[in-house]
Image (cartoon, rainbow, N blue to C red; front, side, top):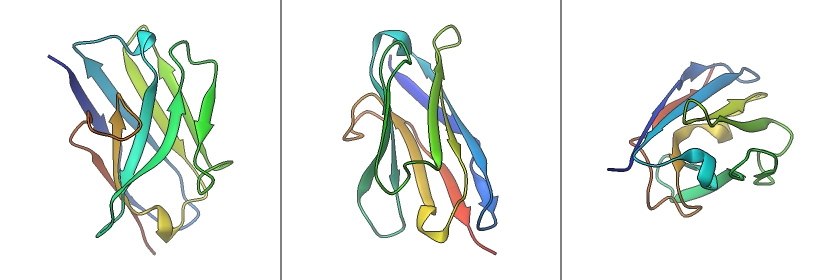
Length: 115
């Protein structure tokens, strides 16, 4: 059974940083492209980042390029997203997903950027 469990969200001030984690089970992240998507309050899912199976290539939405970094630990079957220089526009629920559209995703972890 495929399961994704995100953690690490919270309340952070503008300009702050967070590191999100995702534990996968039921499949190997080392054999899959993995993704982060997010959903701002009242809006639809937005693709954030993608990393290839071996973790050598990463891709980012323009809105987060240079501020977010995706990584993975295939041995631990985990995915990470480091967020920095956060703004209120980054507020939302963040999900790790097996597909870019986020149809197979976890329950999410909430990030609130506010002073």
